[in-house]
Every structure is written in structure tokens, then in C-alpha cells.
Image 1: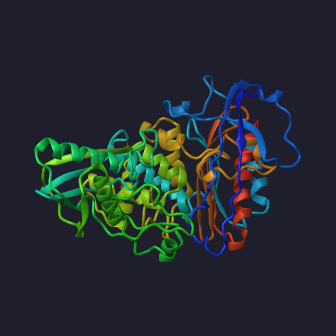
Image 2 (image 1 turned 90 degrees about the vertical axis):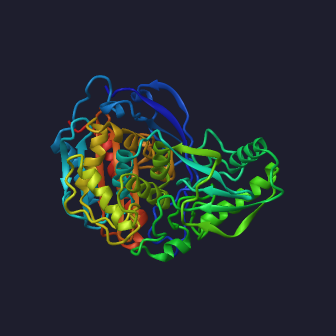
Image 3 (image 1 turned 90 degrees about the horizontal axis):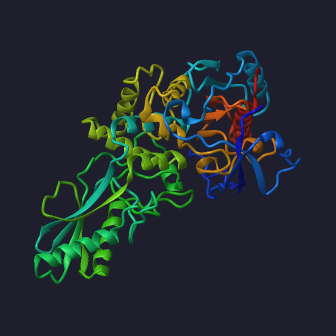
Length: 483
């Protein structure tokens, strides 16, 4: 009998974007899924799915948790491993169906042991799209303390001069920070109130202060030379900087400010004035050299682990680049896009993972000409699922959940896939002719599997068909007893 799973109610929305503007970025999900947990039940007692999709969908849900190696998704007692031949028959049937357009790289492994169960062109370098972010996320978590936070501070630079010092946080709230949020955890109003309190304690406060911003932390180029600048203009990406405001992340057809540091210093001056210290922005507010002086206050971001999960969940390009640059800078490495990409590959290679055949030009996957074999992505995932590298467990366990969260919130609602909504966790990827999906799922018998599936010859008009084909492949793995 299949082991008990958990029921979840899934309310999904399908968001279709204009095909003319959607050129390279991951499919952008606006409406998140809603997850409701009930008591465990035997799936054999569940009614069969309705013949047609309904707005409210009930599926079988398994939520892996990062609790030490194989506990990511495996039951307390070992579940049977799928028979390789039976699994191959199920996978081949999906690859023969429409949607892969005659070219794919696929690798499926046992998530407990890392044993390869199925492979197709797994060593052929292909464009990974945003599944490449798994390499970047690994490099970030292997370098930076996942429990550390990014500090934004204010220092006195003169009797009537205050400098906002960037520390890598690009999601500062204009007002008070929200201790439960990732975006907006640290707030400029909180920082301003600290500054006003400190200045008052020092004696007679100035009648007015001028405010600048110190941008000397982890500096580097704003845009990769290999990026298509139309992606910036359309709101699929933004320049890399070390300070910014919550709510200004790019969205399709809503690009971010070109200079987020100016937005941040303007918001800080307003927060100081609101807190009781009149402030104005300096005529030339952006400073590139470090500013020293007494610290008047500081606020801290969500943890590096939370920020990395956020970047993976929503496929945040600039945030991924930001964190990767900070990791390389922390390790004394380069801060240009190519240098950071090389640093990430070298860091992953330090785990004993073969990175040959990989060509990275940035951390986010937004450069068109990047290549890597599916095996490299698979081995990074397996380092987390098998317990070989505990620091990578959250990277895998907190990936978007099929039909429920992040870039998978609008998927797995088709008749052919909705029965497994809530079970697979995966990173999506879409760029040019590539549609990709990489992550974990749990079979009907309760065995954890990892998968990387990349369709790399998809015509522009076939993108949604390819996306559904990848979801069907993952559905086949999840429903397969294969024994």
C-alpha cells in the first residue's frame, strides 16, 4: 500500500503574459498558491480526479523538509527504489509525446543514494536557463554563513552630514521593517528613528542634515556585457547594486529604477524628516569611497538562507547576482560577472563535482550562450538530498512546490498533472529555445527521486507545450511505482 500523504487544497491561477515581451525570463507567476494542511490520509481512500479541471483542486501533497540528509522526503523506513527498466519505459513514453521537439537532456536519480536510474544526453552541454541558479545558490550557501544577515547602517560624516552605508540589502522597506517578511525585513524608518535617537543623546541636534549613500561595499559592474538590455527594459531583470527598496524588484513591463541607490537615499532622507530630523539629499549623493564615522544606527536583512530561498522561489535574477557577488567578494574573489561565474563553478567543484563542459557567464542564467550538462545540476541537487553536503539541504528542500508556490504556483493544474500538485519541488528555467525543470519528487511508493529535464530545441510558439510536457514527465515519475 502506498504510504500516507497529506491533502492540500490548491487554488491556482493561470497568468498568461504577452508573447512579444516574454523573451528570456522565467515564466513570471503573480498569483501564489494557497496551502492548507489537514490530517494524513491513505491516498487509496481519495476520490478520483474530476474529468475536467476545476477552480478548486484537491491533490496528493508531500512537503519535503530540510531535516538532515534523506529526511528531505523519504519515509522513516526505506521505500522501494523504482525498477530502472520500468522507469525508463515510463520516461520514454513521455519523451515521445509532443512537447520535447526531438531534443532533451534528462537525468533521474535515486535521491537517497544518488544512483542514476535514467539518463539521456546527461553529459551534453545544453543551455540551462534559470536552473543554473541552483549552481549559484550552492556557491552562495557554501561560502556565506546561511544564518548571517546584511547590515545597512548610517554614519555621521560631519556635524550636519549623515551617510547611508549600503551593505547588500536591496529590499529595504521605506517604513518600518516587517520581522516576518523576507522582502522588507529591514526598514528605513527604523534606521531613521535610531539615528534621531542617537543624535539627540549626543546633544543639540543640527537644524537640518544632508544625506548621501556610501556604495563602496562589494562594488562591480551594473550589467553583464552578455545580457540583452531589452530584458532590463521589459522588466525581466535589473542592474546589480548593493542597496535598493522593497517593492522595486522588476516585474514584466514594470522595470526597476536604473539607479536604486538614489531611490534608497531619497527614501532615507524622507524617513529622517518624518522621524523629526529635517533632511535633504546631497547634490551628489552617491559616494564610491568608504565613509568612516560614528555609527548612528543599523538595520539587518533576512538571513542569507532566507534570501537565497527567496531568489530561487521567484527566480530573482538581480538578487541571485547580488548574493553571488557578495559571496565571491567575501572569499576575496572577483566582482565582475564572468569572475563571479567562475568563482561559483570553482566552489561547486570543491565538493568533488565534475564541472567540465560548463560555461557560465553570469550567476542568474540570463546570458544566452551559457552551457552546462544536466549531470552537473543533478549532482548539486543530490549533494543536498543524500546528505553529502548538509549546507545544500535548504537549497533543495525549499524549492517552489508544484502548483503551490513561487514559479510553480500557476502550474500542475492541468487534468494530466494536477493529481501530483504539492509533491514535486523544482527550479524552473526558460530562455530562448530552452524550457527546463530540475528538482525532487516522491514516487507513489514513497521513494525520493531527483530529476533534471531540459528541452533545448523548443520553438517560440511551443514554449507552453514544452512546459506542460516537462510537468507531465515529473507527474509520471511521481505516480510511478515502476516495479
